[in-house]
Image 1 (cartoon, rainbow, N blue to C red):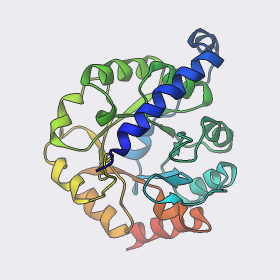
Image 2 (tube, one colour):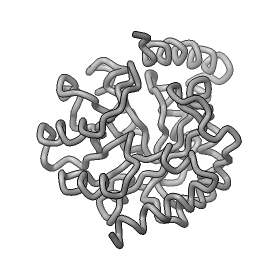
Image 3 (cartoon, one colour):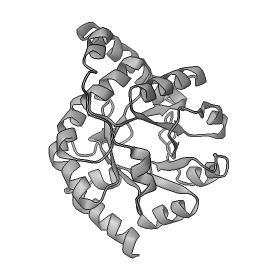
Image 4 (cartoon, rainbow, N blue to C red):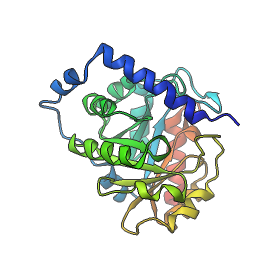
Length: 262
């Protein structure tokens, strides 16, 4: 079976190497002065009655284009108005149709925490995220060694950003460290892209009780969010359910209403 994650990481290595030729790490570091403080995604989720992390993404490797012409200048404010607790913005171009500039476009238009959803393999990407306005970054256990993950998490926090660690199976529990702010359970296998929401319920019992838990992928019904909250989750990363509709913000509003009034 084709391993999609392996293809993504191979491309990401080439992509980052090319970006470094255009703008050096030292140049990025020079731009860190006088940046505004970041927003706490962890606190936003902990204080929210719904915990929806509304995702902006144009396509998926498994389903091709979802909404090719989607504009973050339109979708991000609509998500905020509809009751999102935080935003997730995909910045991988080849496989997901996103760019780092999507965060730059959304940042001045919303006051929500923004997660850079990316396959981060190099600290260079952390500097990019901080400079463009991200408040948190995703680190994917399946894409890193435990040592790489620990180092990147520490660097992200040193730059003022929070870290959402994404796990998929019990074998990845050793990726959890003191530098992790939130633990996400991906219900999608990044090798095959098969999705099973039950994965969150299975792993919840194995995670630290004090951790802020996020369930990612495959959530399409408000009832599922209610069940996950009962299992201890406080964040719910949802993208395709909203992005496949003509008006993602309206779809989110209906979803939030169903959770709060249902």
